[in-house]
Length: 112
Length: 190
Image 1 (cartoon, rainbow over the protein chains, first blue to last red):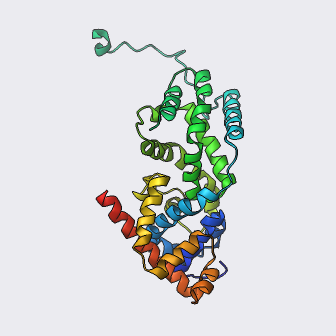
Image 2: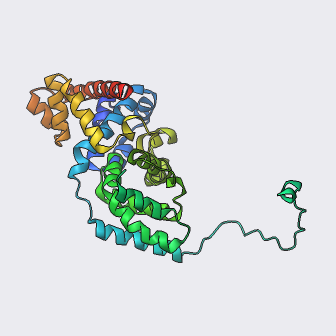
């Protein structure tokens, strides 16, 4: 990926390689301004990336060494527990009805 | 959708948080393989896939409303990608954007794209369609894709096909586009 201003087929090949090796950020960082523009303006590149992702899924996802589901379940549970413990924070102070006048119920509500 | 998955999904939509938490285990067991393979298409990295998926499941526990009316596996995959996975996939790369020469929109399209027809297919369906499409390629094109899928580098493929690296890259690009139109044809007919 050391070349500068690669052609579209070279870019696709490098993207496919990066996706296969799990290092897409390295590919993204390697892009020059001109290559970024080339990618942006090439419809063929976007068509090809869709197939590359499919090939990646079919060719390599099966070979990936994934975690034991039992262990993973406990990771998920720990994540849920941490969310339960974490108080929900918001940037704005909560609105309260205190100190505000109560509005009269709308006519539609009365009929219901 | 099989009964195990349907029951697991039912448990997720109850109001009580503790019951939902207990319902997560069967849901994770029923979907882990499917989801992790799907994420692998976009990340190509087991560790990142697991990190993203952990947050995806926790988000589902928090709010599974989107999954209430899901009826098929395909629909489940599509909904989970659109409403839970995509957000996290984008987050993986968001911080990088300042240092890249790629506009935000292109970055998103590359890392967490809109779902194309091909990407909504299940793994098994995809394998079958791809197998058929590969059968229609020329021998040289098929060999190049097979070697690529076996993990060969462009240089190694060039050695195997007795050609140059540049020619292999061009061959891969053209073959990919050919495969795309064949797969689209299949989707339109199917």
